Length: 594
Image (cartoon, rainbow, N blue to C red; front, side, top):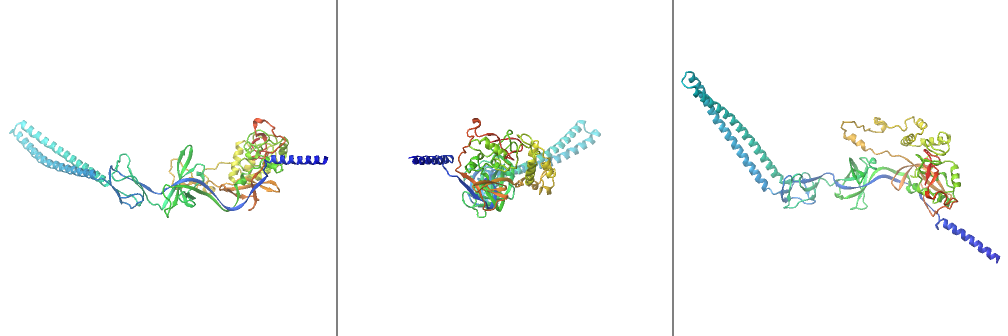
């Protein structure tokens, strides 16, 4: 009987233990998901949508009003330059021409009449002038009275005035002839415009009128046809977001697809980035024109394209899955694996109070790094005494090492950067591994926080962090330097320099390996990404190495400090561990973990 009771007690204890294990793991076994590091092509591309359209498309209209009497072209008609494609009713224009011709003939007759009157008045003026001369001699001999002499003088003066009037009449008749001629030319031009011809060789893509329809040309010419010059050369008008336009430059390759031909890739080249911005719902885009060959005429005007502009490409590159870069183990993960939390996983949060902080006041740790319950005080104290190591920020970027207090302003206990020779040596090594742009950005951030950066500036000759001069030589910039001058027009070559793409930069990253049932961090430097894979620039990893992309079956850790802390703060903990950004210690003050 006693033996049976002992057996029952053992069975109950084993069952309780199994039930507790099952509850702590949410009833799911722990499974580590991995993916191998591989080699392949990585294409960094800017995605957008656009519309296909002809390179040259001419809208044919009518300069005169009238009724459509005849149409010589329809949709998809191939037309040649100067080919008649439509005619308006010419009756009204023909009558206007006839009226203008009659007016011109009348003006010419009036001119001839004015010239004849001039000849007549010239003869009369000569006679009256001769009479006045003879009367002067007769009056001196007292053969005629003074009154007769005065009358002959008045008649001579009137004849001279008549000559001037005849000259004016001739000038007026000449002007009337010119006016009638101009009116005739206008009428003839309107008659010619009633016959509409094609301005270019091409194909009719749109017809807007029918026979018998009246078109009225008042302020604008009515649209009759739309003619595309050459459909074997097309272009895509794409709207590139302002966040991506800095990476787009003329000459880049473009791949796109249309719904009419699924699965078929079409290719083009960036031809122009227009400076005129378009703002819709506070979203700014820039029109980008892409040249597309269309020799087989499969692409039609108006088709919607889903395109990718190739910014950069790496062939046969060592690449890491992006899921591995995004993976961040939490405290629960290490508890489920019976593994102590390494310093790299003890990410700090944002803030300037507490024991340590990240870069710029501490970095916000990834949500996946925070436990569902606050860790115990003992665990936190043990973590604060561990050897500093590289840490991770919330954005997934690895950071430089740090411990103790902050660098510059803020920061909780311990000495700063200058008071820790070991930390200074580590940071110098880290600084040397940065690219020149990253070094300048780092020193600029430190100066903004009031930190002493003389050691870093001396390391690179005192030039880091300085603003680049716009007058720097072309050789120093690696090409032409665009220097706009006020009041001076710029050539097309200089304007194209506005669209040089941004240089490709390397970024730090961290992935995790699962070795001997333990998570091991590995720091590396990353290059371009296509959204699925990221280029591995340098590191100790080789092709085929399995990297962790996720862990399933991890439940909340049951720690001794469960429920401890202020319940109003939820999952936040003040005084978390920081780094650069997110490691122990930090640059710029204490952090607040999340």
